Image 1 (cartoon, rainbow, N blue to C red):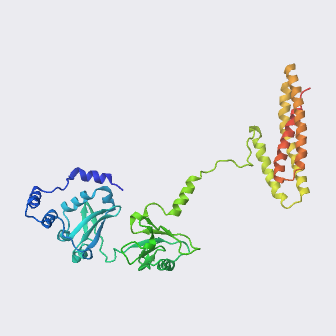
Image 2: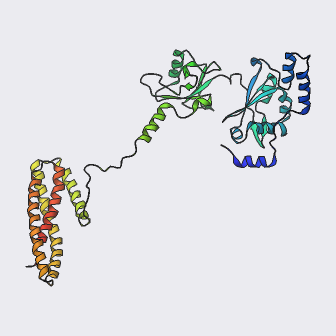
Image 3: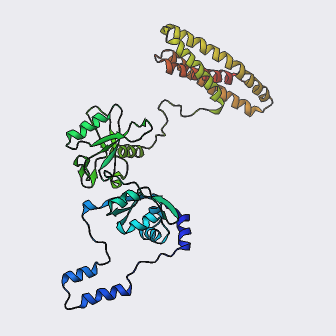
Length: 387
């Protein structure tokens, strides 16, 4: 992650000048280049005279300065300028003539090669100052160039299964260790080290398509792979990507259940909740009773509901009827019209009650019984009109 404050602080006190050849260098090279007597070999040597002398690959030792925050914040030229111009340890001053090929490794640090085996040992663990902050050179290992992978083991999969898997594929592991192994504490997940510098073929579908997950057997779960090559670890493994895509493709449903009530009158909500509570109790009791007992209990419950509601609603309508005696004759006509409508509702309620008793579905019966009870109460109380 870029450290903006660090960058701003460093740039405010240090110039970032580009390295350019001096006039002396150009004059010397141009003299050889324009000479009629110079050979192609002499011209090539003159053009590359400032570069390090090439050495065989087996005589170079790759080393690393882990500084992820530094390479994320500054370009390589700024970091190298800091190493070259900032006071460094004496060991580094002595060894830097044998160091070459500095390169930026994204999200890792700065790598370089050393051509002196003795200096390689001395440089391990040495701290250098980069843009005002200390970073240590990683201790060299003769086997650090070997390819390795981290394996997150699936449940019931063990290290022996991983060894057999790669052995059958022709890439037998050189060493398998717990990813964390310190002071007797070992993690379940493992690191598999191979005997080659290059990526084993069993870990590649093609040169740009690495294997990220494996089944070690037909009945095992997926084991996930983390590569030494960080470019192979872009994004989650395929199975995890597929699960994430499926989750994003299916939005959460907001549709109400099919059996959910669509509307309830405000003045009926309290009575409806009480009736449904009683219906739930009757449903639990009916699991052990016969159908005849269920019908008897339903009828008794209906009578109780009607009686209770009758008392409350009759009082309310009696009060209303006492007020209606003071109204004019037009109100009396309206009352008779309401009485006629109430009679029709009473007939419909009786019809609904008879259909409820004949219903075989216990849950629907409870709900309809409660509804018919309310309708009956309303129709009876509406029928009480002032003559």
